[in-house]
Length: 117
Image (cartoon, rainbow, N blue to C red; front, side, top):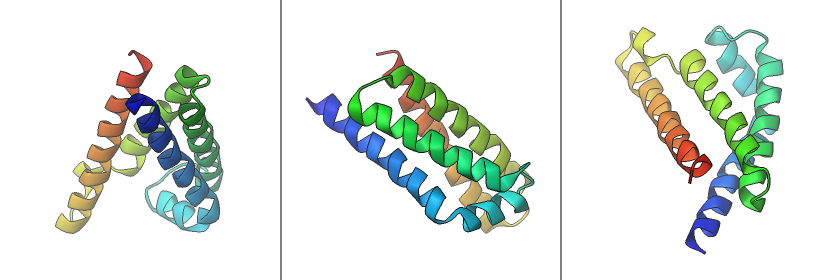
């Protein structure tokens, strides 16, 4: 029962983030462009689809393995292409990007645990 509730909450987290990517595409696109991401608008739109799909699989306990794969790929790409804290010169930017990177790695670890438990 507790695992079901936690999966629903995690799924909701990803769905809301996906919706946020759709609503605020221009903001994410600008951020991605500054980070040198190829085709930032398309990548933001694709990421929203992956986030919503992955979150839905977790919420409804259906095709979870595929959702976890998609979300994991998203987190790895986002972490290493957008949150490159090791390249930041400004200490505030370095701290912010390192926190985003660490958060993504923690969520990735959780997803791997879900996939294999």
